[in-house]
Length: 149
Ligand SMILES: Cc1cc2nc3c(=O)[nH]c(=O)nc-3n(C[C@H](O)[C@H](O)[C@H](O)COP(=O)(O)O)c2cc1C
Image 1: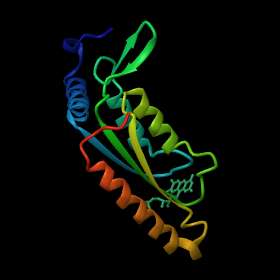
Image 2: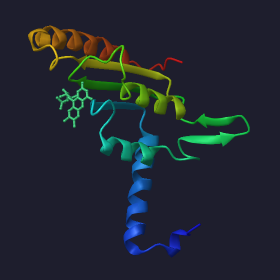
Image 3: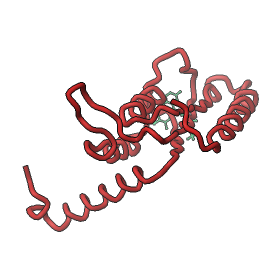
Image 4: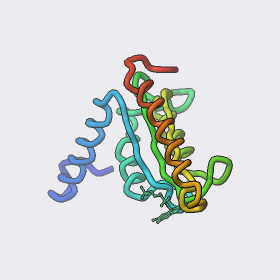
């Protein structure tokens, strides 16, 4: 294992930035993730961010019974746009993010999914209106203080 002091100046700068982002995430009360569905999943930039916030000892810990999330008093919303329909299909975007939230202890999670506007352009307006309505409902519960378990 490399010690921090043994890293190059460039590596130290990068590690310091990763730590800063992890601390920023831990200190927040609420999270809003807005993503497009890319090839059934999330964009690689977000995957890199997830690797920055899933840190043992900070957002989860290992116990004799397995990993336990440490961010139990937080809430999150995931808003995702998808060209096609995936609610009953191979969606690894929303499902993946929800798995990550669960892993780090965030159980109060809502999703707003806008899907199918590219696949069914004639229904695009209707799909958008439905999503806006859902977003308003989610926003009103998201603004409240209490955390659902
Ligand atoms: C690289 C790339 C991959 C995509 N993959 C999918 C996909 O797997 N399924 C899908 O329904 N739409 C896919 N799309 C379409 C986007 O999900 C859709 O355009 C969505 O509205 C993007 O959000 P945005 O309008 O905020 O950019 C893809 C788009 C791009 C650019």
